[in-house]
Length: 368
Ligand SMILES: [Zn+2]
Image 1 (cartoon, protein in one colour):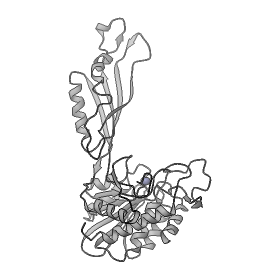
Image 2 (tube, protein in one colour):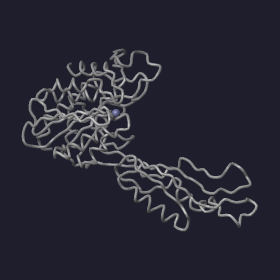
Image 3 (cartoon, helix red, strand yellow):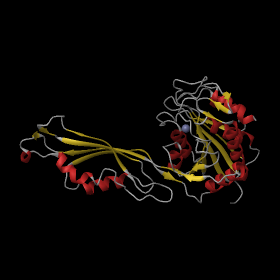
Image 4 (cartoon, protein in one colour):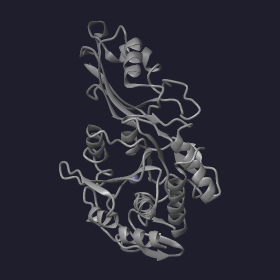
């Protein structure tokens, strides 16, 4: 199959972040009837390819060609596609050269589409991801070219091909909370302001606190303390301050402002400082969205399984698409060897992925 040939070629191309390994030139040559826009920012290469077939919705396939370093201990060359024991091995086999090969081939093979088809490709997802997908979206917004719907082909399946798509992701918020006191001699507790004493009665309302109850799609957002420290590791001096570090993997019910307000209430009589920042935002695509319905139907048709609608896992570039109000889902092969040595997938999964995308493209104009 053509898609497997392409997939093996991608695996044989070394493309460590932020290097595209020449793949963008390759894709441009493959899709000659598509218009190409190259957006390079701070040494990161990005490619946007689009074609308007007719009036109608704009559907975009998005992904990254960069991979994480191979690491030590591979049984074969990580930058060669090696077939063994029914698997295809190589860095990026799951994350996410299988996804890129599947949608590039599916879009290249599309004879017709009810609207505009596009590809958004970056070489900076595994790195800081500050000049990748987001840079392309900013450009598209400026030129009124943002897609209506998007599929990110990150690996999403758990135990069987087609068993899960992602329709949202939790965000991540990091913070350092400092409780201010006044250092002094342990023998004169009345003359010091011990920050541990200030904090102690309130700590139970902070550590492990559930900021919401979760919903049908997300677990509750929990305040997870990762570090507490204060003092000088001696027994005769009380600490000047106590610092607590914490992380919240927040769902769409809790915002950074909610956390600030909660802590302001809990610590209302205590001098404190809060240094808090969002490293990625949460999102969830409506279950009734056309892209959720059509992706689900295409998987049922091709993989003979109904995918669950998951929001588990870390972050991906899907968050950026959601930020620009694009309805986005993620679907790709199984993800049990991502970032590991001997990363691998099967030809069957890549073929099913390609066929699912082909089915999505051909049915997207039809009502569901
Ligand atoms: Zn990835």
